[in-house]
Image (tube, rainbow, N blue to C red; front, side):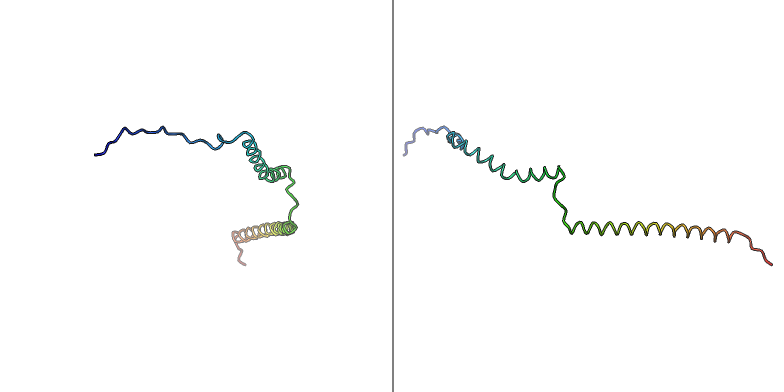
Length: 110
């Protein structure tokens, strides 16, 4: 036979957040450290965005400039060829119309 007494349940203690146990100077130091880290990380990003907005993103790569010049030359050549192509197309249309007219005219037999 065992004797058991009433079971006493201790009240549950809510967890204490870490910042509640820190003193004021430590919290101030941690806040300053956090903001310094954020500034250290964000400064280059903000500076790059500002340069992009101002249009001073830097000078283009010389290889890119050479490639762009080559593409401009090719575009000029293509435009010239396009003009020539349209001219040949008009000549072909004219020739087809002449041939069609020639077929429609009755031929005179001697």
